[in-house]
Image 1 (cartoon, rainbow, N blue to C red):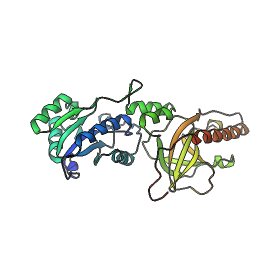
Image 2: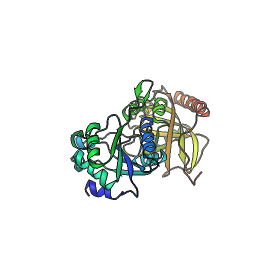
Image 3: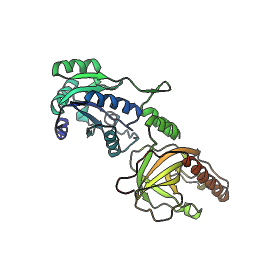
Length: 317
């Protein structure tokens, strides 16, 4: 199916003001742009976003497998929560990479009833990134739509970008990542059977089979909230390879506090609040158990002073 055919499946009911991009994470910088989009669209037009489920680098450099801050479905939900009326999720393909900026403008103007185009500070549309601000403004004069650019949002003198968020999380700075995201980073997946080593230590953990492509914070122990069964639970989460046991497989293991029950096969989401400590190797099992007990106590203190940023699933709380 061609790009124009895919767009035709989202034909809006009224004129639109739209923007185009990956919007990985829908962080505060994105929300800054979306706020302008919504203000400039109201009241005559619908604010709309065309968002790509994959980053263009996966097309330009085959074999590249970047990580993402959200699943495509979560991203669509976040865009709608931000006030976007029409979200058009598309895959960035080889065919799309060869659409010229002029063709892009004509398709958006025609199929999407575009009356205004909002560009971010680094935005450029069409093959070879030809469609920069000046080019698209000229196309707008030809086709009858306006084009405006939104300057970047800066926090402490640093532009808020998905790359910067990812770098913070990989470094284990989940609190710093949250300040840029406007919410805590989370991982989701299903609980799978592990080696049950935590159970033998007195701290049974839920091993999460994280959805492919989601970015994992750096190795360490984190104070987290765990979401499952429509409820929120205090938890402490380990990311790493469990070096005390000489293992090499990187895992996400969640100890749910004050809970007993079978979680196997259940979907779970884990919201990261603060890093408690780095991953360590312990001399013996007793030292490891003592440290886990301290980790749980430290996580309780952190969570008692923190506010969750993920909503409970509607209709299940």
